[in-house]
Amino acid sequence: MDRGFRGAHSGSMETFESRVRTEFAPKNTYLNTASTGLLPDRTVAALRTAVEAAAAGQPTDMFADVEASRASFARLARVPVRRVAAGASVAVYSGLIAGSLPEGAEVLTAQGDFSSVVNPFHVRSDLKVRTAPLERLAESVRPGTALVAVSAAQSADGRVADLPAIREAAREHGARTYVDASQAAGWLDLDADADDYTACVAFKWLVCPRGVAFLVVPEDLGGLTPLFAGWVAGEHPWDACYGPIDELAHSARRFDESPALFSYAGARRSLELLEELGVDTVRAHDLALADRFRAGLASLGHEPVPSPDSPIVSVPALGHRQTELSSAGVEVSNRAGNLRAAFHLYNTDADVDRLLDVLSA
Image (cartoon, rainbow, N blue to C red; front, side, top):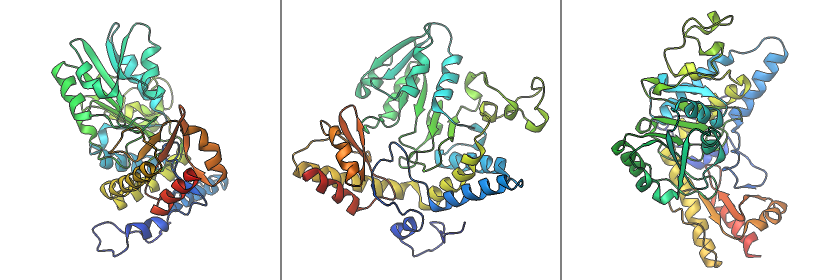
């Protein structure tokens, strides 16, 4: 559905806020994108169209939506589209990478990282999994480390990994890097070309429906075996429906999961919106709101977990107020006893002030 959006270079005089307001109209103070992002109006319309067309026996070409979504994410991640696989889960892709490692390989992870990033490595009892504090991850890479797996931004508290330092240490010791960008893609300047593997669910900061995830692999496909290859993994999928696949896709598409088509029908429009707005603009907007919240917290005598370059702000010992805040129409998360607020493109100064007002009561 055409909502009047135009590209950043079209000479449009629309402001960022006015563009966003044509797509989002939350009925509450929604500060919980780190759990689930809101869906743009155009995405809801695309989902409705796809579902109604399928119900009428005349389905739209949702496989084209998968390919458009793949291409859009590739541009956002700054990699060639042939390096992007489309699926539904970071855990599945973590498992794929874990399954590629030889017996006895050492994997270095960040302390307290999200389970979808680390669990698949732990369930392989023949791997050596080490854990280090996020701030010491780079210095903890050592000879013999095969893989460093880390979230670009921590789900629990928003801390951002020092990816340049981690990459440099990994290269020095011959290790690969695996980055989960689920809490970063959509606001962080994501350069997936700098890492060996990057995975990302899209229902958070990329404001897509659930059921959409991407994996970026190296040009040489990273030594991965497509263990869950179905018919969509064939170079010519419609010729690979029966029997073993004669020819796997020559690109990362060999690692595709059979797509949740309705989700991708919507994802195409959500990713389109982010490209129109520009991640740099979204980032500046999000970080300004987070800074406003931090300043307000200081005036109330609260000190958040240090995460100065993140739109996720976690406040120790305030998690118990999540239910009260929700009753007041302010949606945040309670994570490990901390109050977690996440500020994204559809939020405003008024949302920050509303949260602070309730907290001050």
